[in-house]
Image (cartoon, rainbow, N blue to C red; front, top):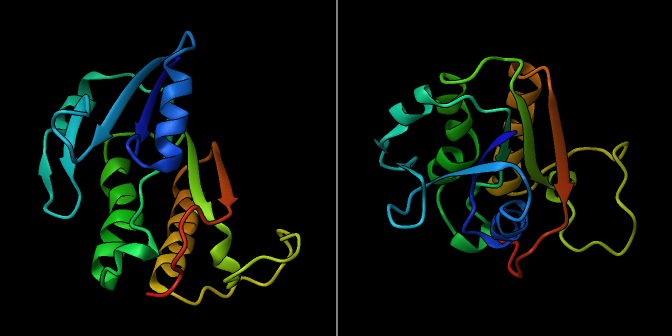
Length: 161
């Protein structure tokens, strides 16, 4: 199995990467760091070497990319990381490619979770980060038949935009 992982230098992405490389899978990384990525691409600047994707047969995409609220970015920067990256990548993959989209429980509007969050909870994102993560989920659902979305708890401290 060949796995393409985006966001492999972040908190969750690096954990996944470190464990995936111990398996039989071929792991290919895509990121904005030329020294740390197999394929370089900066989604903010829209530059890099995505053409290398055409040469690969990817079985699974794991999307752990995303600007976090702590970055205090503007809406466009959140959109570039959380949505536009998916739109650009979709040009290189068929809609039957398997994809795991890492999202956030913040799509429920939760700032601090003192209770169990359920999928049936009302979705009401409160900040640009959560709004664009929800838009990314909707894009994945629409464009990829074989998808899994994981809404994980925050791995950061500051939820304010």
